[in-house]
Every structure is written in C-alpha cells, then in structure tokens.
Image 1 (tube, rainbow, N blue to C red):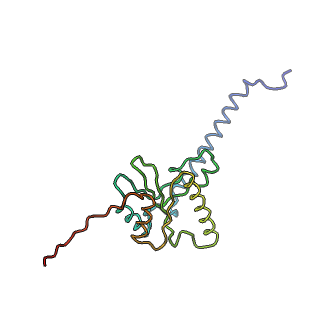
Image 2 (image 1 turned 180 degrees about the vertical axis):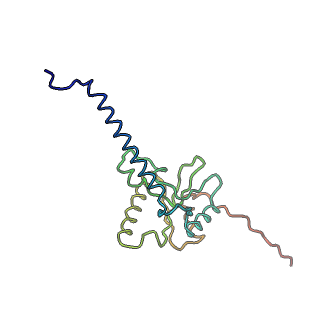
Image 3 (image 1 turned 45 degrees about the horizontal axis):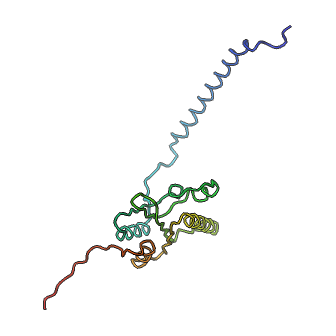
Length: 186
C-alpha cells in the first residue's frame, strides 16, 4: 500500500544525478573560462601613465612648491578619501578620481586639484553633461568633507599654482629652491 517511495530509497539515486549534473556544470564552466582567457584576438593589457602631460606638469609644479611634511598623490579615488553613511550619496563619487591630492603627514587629504584640460568635458554633448554632473557631485562631496577643490584651467603657469597653494597654505609662502646671487665688483 505504499503510494510514494521511501525518502531513503530516493536519496542515493538523487545524489548520483546531482553529482553528475554538478560535474557537468563545472566542466562546462571551466571550458568557457579557459576559452575566454586564451582568446588570441583579445588585446593585451599595457602600461599607461597616471597623468597626461599637462597634469604631470602641474604635479611637478605643485611638488616643487609643496611645504615640507605634505605629500602629493595622483589619481586618488574619491571612494578612498571620503566616507559617507548614506550608500546612495557615497556611490555618486565612489568611482571618481581626483587628478592630484595633497595630504598631510597622516595621509589625510587636505586639498584636491582638478585640471580642466581640453579632454575634461569629452567630445560630445552627452559626455560634457556627464562630466558636469560628476564635477558637481565631487564638489558637493568635498565641500561637505571640508576639503577644498581647486580647479586649474587649461592654460596655467607658476602664478596660477602659487595662487592655488596660497588658498591651502595662506600663512606659508611656497618654498622655492635657493637662487644663486651673483656679486658684481665695481
């Protein structure tokens, strides 16, 4: 009078079927991953500079004038330098990067520089709008954190950098290398 088979009778057969299916799935997944990894038509990774030429020029100019005890960082993730209890707000800046950041001795970010070069706003209307929204999100986040965001225009010089550093270090004059003084005899 048993209409249904006993659970203990089905268990070995069920386990065997499950084992065969699992092995098959693992085999298929392994083959797919291997095929993706070994594709000869895929381009290889290549090294890329962190900064473009104008950004590197800006970096060197800041580094040359930076007071002792401070550090200069390039391409710093906003997700690493900022925290927010709201996940939604955090996600608005998490994947964005600062061109250059100045930190104190404890590596706390004290200022961020953004170079507004020709590629900053992209090549079309959509990328320009996306860049403006991203800039606004970065500015808002840094304002809330009390970190100044300093925009550097496409064309900049030593005066531009000195003025920017004066905002961060108002009591300190930028350190410059000593200038050789030539004495003339008359």
